[in-house]
Length: 289
Image (cartoon, rainbow, N blue to C red; front, side, top):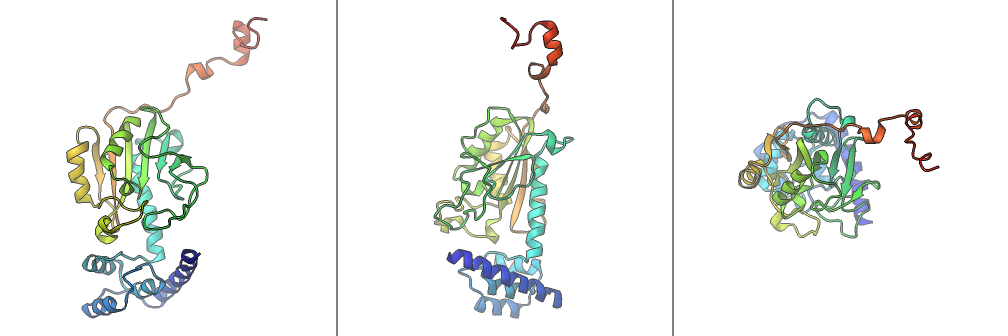
């Protein structure tokens, strides 16, 4: 209940911040601004409404620089957050094999939370409703039709999936490279994995995360490149990394080598019509009469 009330209050203050931004254009932070914020921000809960209200007067670049200097969570305005979400989803969807519309592909969205991304993606998560624990990293909204499965044991056979997306999910497992290698076995040749990961320098250090569902390792593009070279190079091609303009997260696209073959309806499923089967004497309802 307490978290629910806080979120309602936060939403109201975000509307105030947006209104204030319309009246007062954002500006760069000065050293005096930084000193003032260091004294007046609630660093124990950066998403607090008062913090959002104070920070919304400054440019996103200034807020990102302040976050890095103070080892605190970077804050964005509601409009910026909506754009960030859109850009993250577009970046992750580049994992889909090129030249095909999503409606033609079998893609899965692992750790979906409530981010549907596309109606043509199958959602997968470890829960459909909130657990008792609501701490860092835990979802606050869900898709009730999600397939329940653990990321290391998915209900798909080898080389059956066209592409996988996982947005803000992989930082929640302690063995990310093993997970990616396992996902690679599920991909068809030419399939891809699209990841969105937080930049821990602008969010928080996983070494201080005590949540069971929280962050299990520190992620940024430099760390991911190092892990890729050590564990994934030769198995997956690093096709894209760190193309997003904001600092809170970064994108990765990995590609399985090989020529992609899309789904096709088999002859066993639909070779002959009922009339043709009757004429051939192979209609199953008539055989043996």
